[in-house]
Length: 272
Length: 291
Image (cartoon, rainbow over the protein chains, first blue to last red):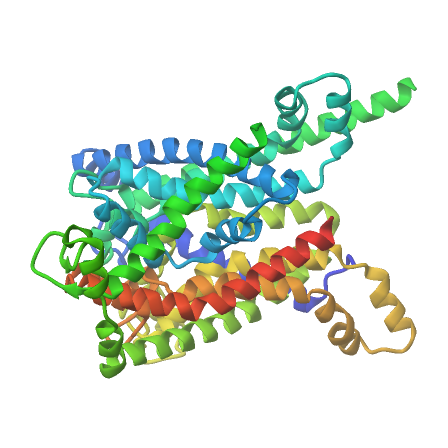
């Protein structure tokens, strides 16, 4: 299974062109001097300058960042707990309902999640703002975290944990000293996933935020509804750049740690 | 004791912020619109008994009488179905080629598929506005190579919505199919070919059935969210594009008719229950098979 047919090469090429060309065009045209976004009029960085002096965008970015950091941290804690319960919890009353509540939000249309949370918040008389967005984001992203973490927990050798318990560790110590370090990569990628989901969300934030809190996607939305704008192209380029750098760094780090693990294993094998 | 706490915390959180809100939506879908805050009646302030007596199915009757809603549900189903098939047609060959690619390339190819997924959804949809518009890049390109002589109208049509859905949901289709194909034992296909199967036949009889779970998971991951999609039809679709997510959003924010918006959400949820349950079964089966 490792020779590519011409058809395979064509489908890969076509697929990646399709995935990347739209973003590439955005990036290139963010350096366009013209206000008209489809006509090239020379290189310029003026839209970046205008973007960075636009207080409304900076405020929205700050709100978004705060919401994302807080909600993804809560989501990671809750999602890891949920994953542990699902994989190791054994049988308990209402387990089917619990696993249903973990899987359903993954595919639930955002309009429904957003509407239902908003109606709840209004029903209990809660003021809408940063707090309500954080609660909403935590709820849907904890399910993504729990799916990522539980897939790691399933492949992990339970006898290590049992050995720690036999040797006198308390269940909490066994979790902290054995389980957590082993599932840490999954917990970290769960956090990153929750973080990006929160950064990215428009619909749920629109429903659950009040006049006091506008997130960056909401700000982008209100300006792209009026058509293409060079400032949004500049903002998109910054976001695409940050994500690219982040993903490349993460993949290099995980490759290096895999290499180190392999070297350690080989060293251990030689020592025996 | 510790175990109980461990179970209770995420359980109660999800009950309070996932399940209870649906009960609230259901209750409001049975209420009437009112010029008050909150803009529906009756509420719990009227006393529980009076509140329960004031509930009725009026909004649901209204939804069946006004054909806007019927059309919106049907056209959402149609758009979601067509886009899922299109995404499968683009995604399967890519996943297949990735699984056949030399070992040392696979990690990079996988990263290239995942990378757009980390990038803002809104921005990726927005990128297509500039490409598909009348004087956009696609039309400029096609005019330049001489395929067309007048610009095509793509933006603000259903075609643009299909392109947008395929584009944004493609990674969700590729990843489960790739992981199914990656696990596939290549010697099975060799055996089939040795026994006289043509390549095409071996593909249909072995590769497709063995990647079935991946195909099912990918299709659900595209179909279910696409059905309630709001951003793509609002940004790329036109006035003729009816999708229920858009109708719900407008009913809520523009018309401020919360009871009708809730009724729209309840019916959408009922439509979604079957695919969601099937999706969950498929996931559990795979999880158990993976153990």
